[in-house]
Image 1 (cartoon, one colour):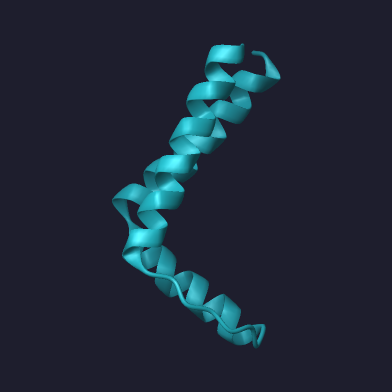
Image 2: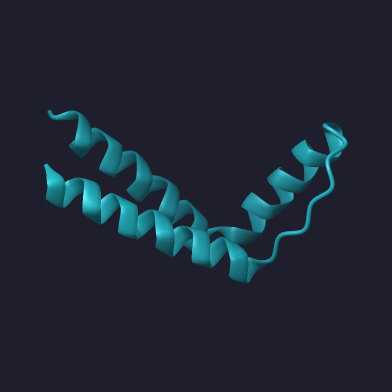
Length: 65
């Protein structure tokens, strides 16, 4: 398997997780950032946009292959 195919699968997995399960991701992110004492504010809309961006990146990496 080529590296771009592996990278596109990784980005596709991340995108699907962000699009299907935004609430658990926000909770986990909030707990980690609170533990690290970093200010944060994320919404479901931001997670969905990030998921769409990851989908586009996965598609580009797959097509470059």
